[in-house]
Image (cartoon, rainbow, N blue to C red):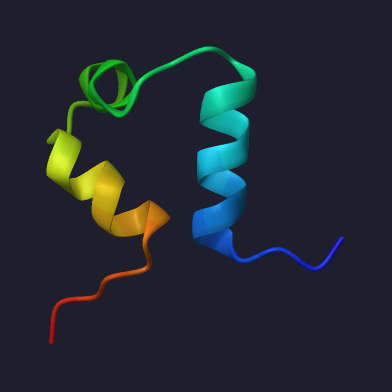
Length: 44
């Protein structure tokens, strides 16, 4: 299994039936943060 971290976050979130918004709420972060992680967008 050669998956990126973002791909793994997305796959596990979907496996658990969560939306990005639901995962964000559980983690105490914004939905935009989850989206950035999944799409591997970094801030420089």
